[in-house]
Image (cartoon, rainbow, N blue to C red; front, side):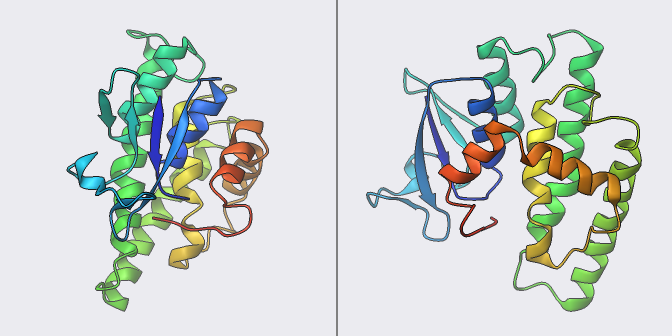
Length: 207
């Protein structure tokens, strides 16, 4: 398999899961500013949406959208800790978190990264994010990870988007449960390996 990624972007989440599951894969770096690959190939030829992540399978089939790719990686590897078995309530709980992160956190960050957004508008969206994170912080008071004691696809996603907070001047320091959670996730071998592979240990970049 091949993962098309941009350093520090939302593609970091499936990257972590690929390493967590022990899957065989290669990386293809995408310049999301110019929408080209390292060899100059137009990324739109890979994904017409122009966004990472894209997971290319052995037969050339391509999957897009991070939460869907996460489900595929976990199901293909048989890792029901990362994504519980289909039809179980535990799976729906992880999917519930995945949907919350993509709709309430990820999309709000995307707006805050826009240089066209006014200072007042940024303050409004930042306040909304703070409220969402306060909810997450309260939930983490009861468990090590989002769904309990097992690290799941949702944790890889939350960790990825929360790393963007400094880039939009979002101070989450008062949320002690979230801070401890980020430290716990950050020391996992798969996370450290993915961060190092993307060059984020030296220079962090969000997208």
